[in-house]
Image 1 (cartoon, rainbow, N blue to C red):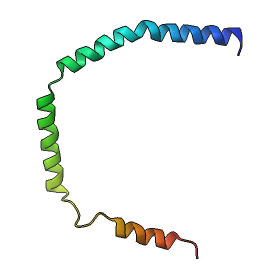
Image 2: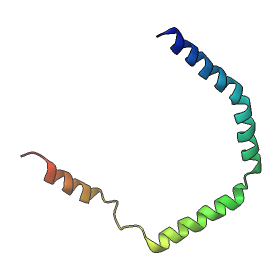
Image 3: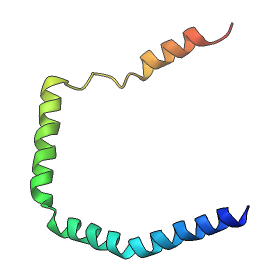
Image 4: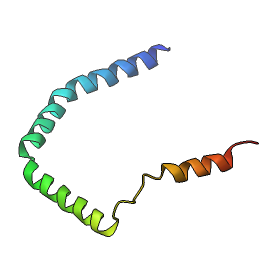
Length: 75
């Protein structure tokens, strides 16, 4: 590794060390501001809507997967 590369790497590390506390403050503020209950309600509505439009299949699809694998198996 050349001296220039080492210097660039040290500068990169120093930049992240300076940015780290600020990024942590932003992350903490985002977590405090999050409305978890409304997000859970939103996700719940999305899940129910997905179930309504794409109900679960009667099986897991494992049997169909095994059929495909059987076709691909060398003879």
